[in-house]
Image (cartoon, rainbow, N blue to C red; front, side, top):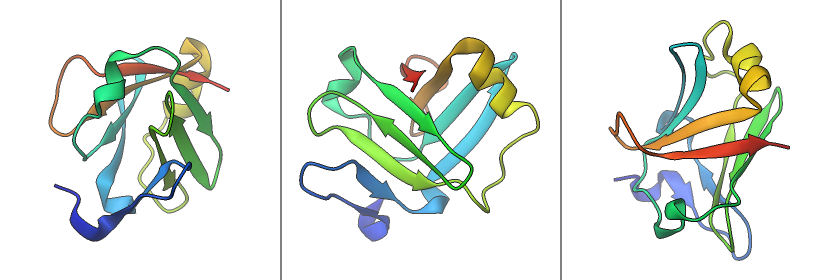
Length: 106
């Protein structure tokens, strides 16, 4: 799905191109949609979200994780407040409307 718009770095989160990332607010909740296939590790606990002005990292267990730019992307009004309020964000993969995983803010 992502082709050459993502780069896997040994021991590091996968770097995603901006066109593979969407920020959403759904029913007051912060959502990060990653337009990549859901990894096997999505069923495991221990995911975290580092949300900064210029970039974000969704980090999972082992080598699972994603690094992507935030600066210049369309982040809906209220997204940061929703992420702060819920202590992280729901992460959805591809076109999924349910499921996903919760990444705790760090």
